Length: 286
Length: 317
Image: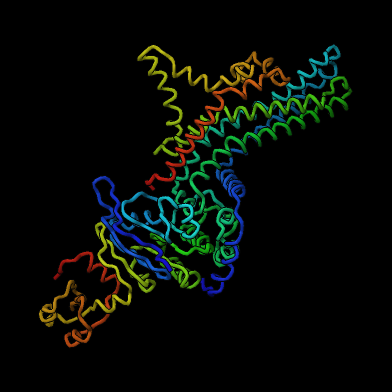
């Protein structure tokens, strides 16, 4: 099976700003990939390039297609949700189902209606009358009823409350995801979704700061929590980042084994959120 | 939201086999436009309703005079002219209002989706930019004109029915008005005029769509100000009026070729010309074989292509 996304030297500039600075990565089928980075790091530029919504330099193949010249073919296989506010306010729920059913060969209206049946959304409502959470539910119902090979979500839960966010990811994981499909997702709220990812790509200043599967992260990185007086000894082993937690010090190591560090304190696999902060700040913090 | 996995996999396989013809997709895209821009069909319907109400009120109000009227001295030709005049008088307000809503629609149709950011939703579906632009153009240049044409015909028939019913019941049978052959002829010529208008104005429609796709804000101003100000600047700078002549040419020349006055049905004093066209002395062959008509259609295709390119490659959402 070919890679879902294959990017080589992907670059994009806005005037003097290099939004993407020669990025290379591969997304394999059947994965849920988190594309994580601070604002302005180039996440959205990368997604737009993948979806054929923007020009770029370098090589990029999505499902073996060129998103610049073969965008129409690509959109049959790829589905995306830019963010919550893009359904037009005048559209009625029933019209949304009818329209997508009318133009998308892979859309199954009964699946979408099934999802909507579990919500409080009424078929004759206009999008403008729905709450933000309901609009997202509607959009999600439309997207999950499309039998797409590749789903791209850019900050899909931005501005939603916790309840809707949880529902969103539960639905995504339980009702949609299977080994035939691939999901690429960006989000700010890393803590909430980190158990979702099978792979993470950290992006910083238009470059890739980290690209690994979650299993690799567990093998490569160890978090050691030590008391303040044991900290200097632990520091000699070369943590790449540390921070204070309730009077103790959490240190992050790369390439050390838990067995090696265990005598000094408590070890665990660092969370993606902690790794993200560590990677983004880079320098040591005392 | 606790569903089982079987809802996701199984039924999704079937629709991939469905056939999606170009025509079906175009019809769906067209219906989408009518959902969003309800004024496109509401405005002509409302005007038709008002016209009917006004006609009925006028007939009822003037009925003593009608009873007394002796129109037996009307020649057959004059009767036919009155018949066609009524037809055109009912139709022209509908075309005028349709032209106005189409103008606003064209300025808005590629701008609104960027303004409300729904363009990212539309672009997530497998519909090309070219097809989207074509569908919007066909709504303005084909669906609405033909729809209004049918509406005008129905309005006219209703009016004639009511009139004949009234004069028959009211005892003025010499005022009965119906001539099947003349009606079909008049409707046929009206259809040709509608098609001619869409072809002649196609480059203007396409220009409005290009502005709608391009303008960062106020597409209405961008669409109207340059054609207003540029001729003014030309005149102030060079004391020439080539631009103004060109705009006037593109606006009205086809009606002169057809043998109508400069503004059919709108200005006073041209009703005779309109009637002339209704009765077959319009130079349809000359109008349809005019080279500028078809050059304009070519220009429209180029402008639409440009609008689709802008929609495809613009990146500011």
